[in-house]
Amino acid sequence: MKFHIETWGCQMNDHDSEKLAGLLLKEGYESVDTVEEADVVILNTCSIREKAVHKVYTELGYLREMKQQRPLLIGVTGCLAQQEKDALFKRAPHIDFVLGTMALQQLPKLVEEALAGHRRVIDTEDYPDNHLFPPEVTQRRSKAKALVTIMEGCDHACTYCVVPTTRGQERSRPVDDILAEVRLMVAQGFREIELLGQNVNSYRGGCSFAELLERVSEVDGVEWLRFTTSHPMNFTRELAQTLVSNPKVAPFLHLPVQSGSNAVLRRMLRGYTVEEYLERLGYLGEGRARFAISTDIIVGFPGETDEDFEATMQLVEQVQFDTSFSFIYSPRPGTPALRLKDDIPHAVKLARLTRLQRRQTEITLASHQRIVGQELEVRIESQGPTDHGYWMARTGQWQNVHLVAGEGRQLPFGGLTRARINYAGPHFLGAELV
Ligand code: 5AD
Ligand code: SF4
Image (cartoon, rainbow, N blue to C red; front, side, top):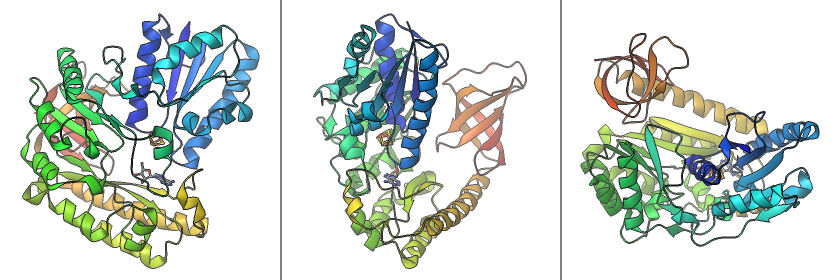
């Protein structure tokens, strides 16, 4: 039997797909790269915004046609599966099984039942050991960076967000468990580790998140340490101190602000003001200059006035985020913000988003231009799509680098190498080997 997994959404979902693939490989299934070759197709879905959900239903439409022509098992997992549960079968009766985000290890059982001819197989229970997934089973896709779960779920209650519903309550993995996985990763050749959780800085698995970073960085062989994603409310002085003082922590901080208006932040139930957000960034002190700061911003949240949006633009000017990810507010089922009137015309939301993204592109380009001429350590991630001797790499600050190595030259995946940055665009840097 051959399986194929399609993944949408965040790193958490990418990593879940690595776990799901590992489970099926262990049972003797074969992994294939395309839907066309597969007997079992699994859609690992995201439901953070309507657009993400739309993509899943489009793919399901395509699979329905394929299933009319040949035997094919279709499974849906991820956040849309957890949110919709068996309602998915009504919407798309050609789905064979639905697997929730907190029941990953049940996958082989579900596939087996579906193969045996059972219809509408489903498990969306919350298994208390979901976050204790056996690391040796995980089938890692990147050769450069190992993703390691440290916690799952989210106890915040941002009014726009589906994640508390789709990923459940916070559960932290014990420190020793995490350290054992990191050691295993290093033994397998990984030098870069990314710690994952919906809210890593509220980690409570036996020590603080700052301490966890210290302990992981002490594992022999770890060169770069990253984490995603964090909440400003849980961003402590202790954590900031660790970030700037520990040389293994890559100089990149993603700290979603969501809005530059206190009135909007209040309606989002973010739990901080703009002033408090800035104060927390300030905890980085002089070390901040070394860090790339990235953020998420939602525009067009219910009731966002022109003045509220101007406050967001002002914040962007003030902080000069190196990158930002910005989105139009998307009403989500079951979220408290549904009770607020989604009162801003789409054209206005779009105009705000466009203005914000244009300005961000200029700021990002300027921040990239400041790097031109520098010699940096970069990590080799993959070979370029053509055979012209260029490679894809990342800086510590997470910028994409197109590295010219010369035709025929082989570079080690996952290895660090020195590069001279000689070009800056808004989306990537150009570099040559030193
Ligand atoms: N609409 C638009 N953007 C959203 N995000 C989360 N929920 C929504 C929503 N309902 C954005 C936030 C979050 C990022 C992952 O997605 O900015 O930080
Ligand atoms: Fe999408 Fe959020 Fe689920 Fe990640 S946790 S897959 S971003 S809805």
